[in-house]
Image 1 (cartoon, rainbow, N blue to C red):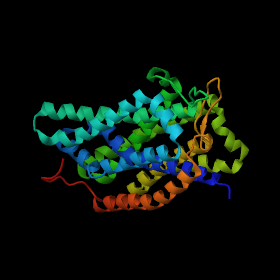
Image 2: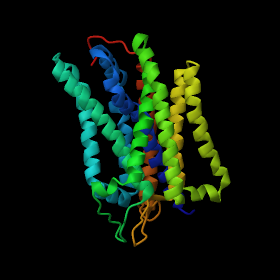
Image 3: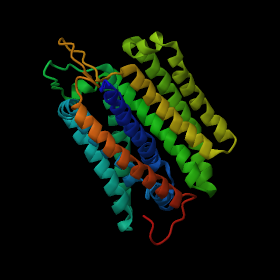
Image 4: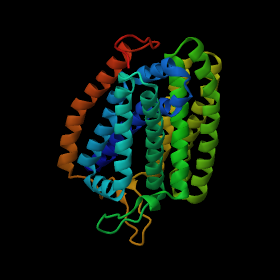
Length: 341
């Protein structure tokens, strides 16, 4: 049997892991982006404790996705982490700052101390979301890759208009996702206040989503080619629009969990659209060599892919089980106590 099916399977696995990270850590980052809007120290502590049990576990999906990329598509890993080195270092620092902010913010009662870490938490969350979006924009737009699979870029070159647009879109998407999550985790006056943030966040996301879609169709038309070749694939963008439209509908009905699931579905479908448009490419090359990194020319050996698939079959259920367990244990509204952040 032709082993190329393993390449497709690993393309899907990497996509699933990174999508899982976007959905799960997306609401964490969205909560951080909205953090400074919370009035008073008590309410900000509620925000911290809304994500406190989950944020570090959510990042397991990013680590696992990076590990899968390294094992299955080492050329993509090497090219991306060298060409986007400064951007990835900045992202790493933002994620570190966010984690430190959560842990040390409430260790001292001084207002100046807490104000500083509140600001660090918010800024690091926004910048991390933006950098994730910028990376997505560059992957979709394409970068000049040489025949030796090398890309030598700098941060300024990566901040072109389309990448900035996708960066802002991801910030808006995570803010919407985080606002809906906070409605599920808060009560009383704070819940009413947070509920009022959801609609502006949805409008912000819908506007940015529309602009990004228009820019993609206009300037990156190759991403639409698979849909023209197979019209049945238009079910995916239709489902994406329905998922987004269902969010305000469920919020209006007071079904926050359904709205959160619709928000999660919209993230999943957005990344699925990107994956379909890119396949089999993992990094599009727009340089003079015409070289792109695909699921075939950048993959490990068939033996490695097969062995890693067995390990993934063992490891992924453990990750899913841990994720399900931790969310089940810490379900419900946030209640502050002596052990809270």
